Amino acid sequence: MSEVEPPVYTTMYKEHPEEKMLACQYMGPKTMVVNSVPKPMITAPKDAIVKITHCTVCGSDLHMYAGDLDSAMKKGDIMGHEAIGGHRLSGIFGYTQLTGGYPGNQAEYCRVPNADLILVKAPKEGVSPEQLLALADVATTAWHGNELAEVGKGHVVGVWGCGPIGLSIAKLALFRGAKKVYAIDPDPKRLEIAESFGCIGVNVREHPDVSDYILQQEPHGLDKGIEASGFRSAQSWIQTTMRAIGVEGDQSDTISHVIKATRKGGNISLIGDFFFTTNQFPIGALMEKAITLRGGQLYAEKYHPYLLDITVKGEYDPSFVFTHKDDFENISEMYKLQFEHGMPGGLKASMATPFGRSLEK
Image (tube, rainbow, N blue to C red):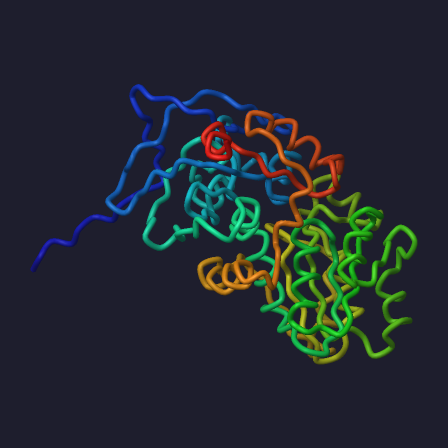
């Protein structure tokens, strides 16, 4: 009987003995620091080392920044899972020990395990760095949200959360033929962006019982409801209190409104991040209304070819999410601005590494 080969473990960060790079490291809640660290090295036959040109901060990175996932982080973890470097990168890089502890790509170099599967070659012409960077995660996640909710021609859709992902979901829902899209958020600037696409903005500060308000507009309910705000979006004093005293991991406020506002036999997708458990989940309403509820991390490799194609053809431009450009060395400030909703233009920044800036000259 032949001997079974041992598995190849590729999560270990193998440090280069001499060469250094700049990388954004988690040093504690609200403390992201750019430090000089050893460059990564190949650890398995299918690894690749990618020289990063542009990266950005994802809304889900802000969970670590805020300290909500501190128990799943190690001091010095390299952050980031949205970057390009001649290739498109996205996935589980730089996203806590819960997803394998892979060092991230908010750095000058990134080691990519199973590169033959994960990397996608990017065209050199006809597409901008910001478009490619948006395709790395934002646009593919947004398409995934629409797919899970089965959004199609003539549907009435509600999207909870108007960050870059939520706005991209709303814009792509219209692209897929939705008749009407309600964009729900407390930020007036983001609602203005949604309305510029042709969405109907709903300010939750003006309509705190947002599901009741939507049902006044749509008595039969939404065909499709999409939760794109995540576990930090607690609104009620009950959920806020439970999270504050540590008896609640996630929150059920937004999904409760989504379930109530969605018609019988409708579809709901969860795209906002949820990690733990939640109290007061309306499981009875979900079951009695025969609603299909789906969620999960995106299948980037599945959606990327089509989204790249419509981007190159000029049918869709995902780069609207970048309302600011900056240098990678300023990423600590970009975290702070994005967390505090103070980013110029209101959404997120595209950051160029020194190598990326040299290509633009």
